[in-house]
Length: 373
Image 1: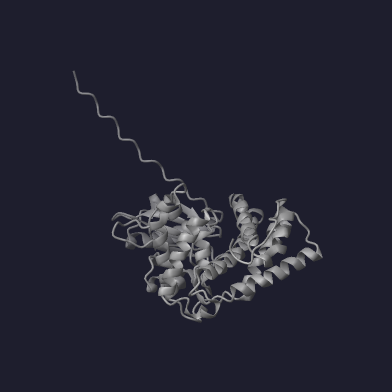
Image 2: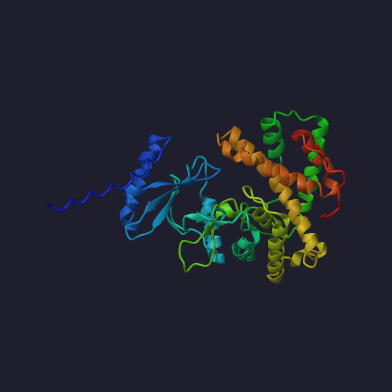
């Protein structure tokens, strides 16, 4: 009896084709990739989609002959300016952060080759049911944030000034209220928003300024792919500015896609405050009392978070209605919840709370506090 034949090896799964809206851009990309393949050991047949973000950028992953992989950024130059990414990547690397190394950049076409920081974002490994189990990860995030802020130098990044804060806040009435909710604002409602927005901007600009990532949250922090790398990777930093020190900690703990009970938010925020004090980052805020009173600092973080939540609610509506990305608007209730929670704590924000409750059909709180309750 003859020995059974060895079954044939299964063919490896085919790599899905990368879609291109513009054939000319696809041709330019293939030409660029072919020119890099030998020098960087790239295996063109392994090219696949890695991720996309809320902009017109997308990221591709490609294997390397020597092992591991690299990332390719596809950023059409008529829609995305990659120069800020290059500038901020250099600033962050110089500060000691773990960021992608730029291996090649075709500026005219908007193609960039980067080293690969790994395949897992922080949000993918977080235990949503046990907040305290995530404390070591958040402590690493806080360390990265303080390291970034310590590198701050005036005049290097664009200012997060009153004009920019106001433009961002305008996204809420323009896109969330008028276009998404279909609301035509009355003169009184417009005046309410204008006066509340002026107050929010004034309060937030009272903070000392540092380098601000502007989207410092678990989706943009990477679990390192190497066991010998203790630092979290940092991504999506191209919109960095010089602005209020409260912004990035507000982004981290009041996340666009993840909510925590306030006990955990307080725990991490106070750890950040302690490190920021030790690093001398709050020294310029002595008049506000932030350096000595965590309660005052936390109040300022809440006001900064309010600005961000109003902005992001507008951005998510715009992504859905203008850019055809409806998945973002599904998280709008989280932002409305953040807005209502903060506005209900402070008497000065009662007009904003009433307006939001009118629009959302929710019940306003019966009393307001000057500070945290």
